[in-house]
Image (tube, rainbow, N blue to C red):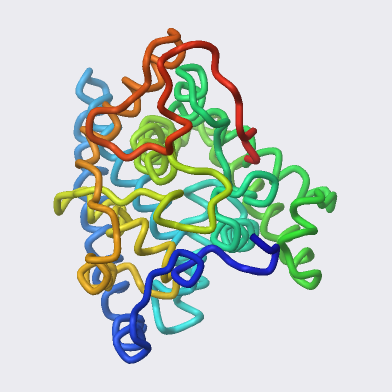
Length: 342
């Protein structure tokens, strides 16, 4: 596959007529504003539960629930606005990108440009700057990924590099030259906000701890279980999104939290399509795609079963989820194919 050929519908042999695609990909402020209002309503409700439960054992499940509604949509909305597809109005898109990236804990322009690279070279070893774990995955890699600490460490390293004006080779590879000053400014402002949140209890201000800091930590594993199944157990170094990327069945709550990104194959085929139109896109191309894998819980349980068996040297064939052929073995030591890039 030549360097200049992006991984998308064309490289995957998927076709959709231009008129239909244009209709599906039309942008609007309305769906994003409705979603934003719904998200704020959920956060108000779960935040109220946390506040009412403070001082009791029930504050912990309340903070977990609040953390899920804080963290998963922060990831999903920052992802959508990084694509520029959440809203038609650019100023609205960029404002929400900044705030949700603050919650997700990644500088927004770094998020945008590394993610653009991820779409251009999806799951391509040595080219994709957003491969968050080694492949094939063992239990240790699974644990490091879903706790969130590996990702947090990477993001904090990025913040420090950007704040100091020290740009890595990856940053230079994926980022337009004129954006670095903005990225440094953003990183410094965000680090200052994080420092204020960390210092708040020393001044007797605890609400950022109960409503932001601890829920962000508690909600991270659920967020990362969503992102894990996007590409895990699938094919590296393939021009076809159908081989490298997974869609999975979902219910209304998971679709809300994840902004319908359970249609992940479809999203990678046509990344210009807004989140609210992904079900329509999925319907339009369904006869050209593999069947979606089972729902969120079942797919994640299958992944966990596979990585445990791989670590123990047991056979690794999954019962119901798709796997690349080289991921299926009769046991024995793992032969690493790719090393994490984030």
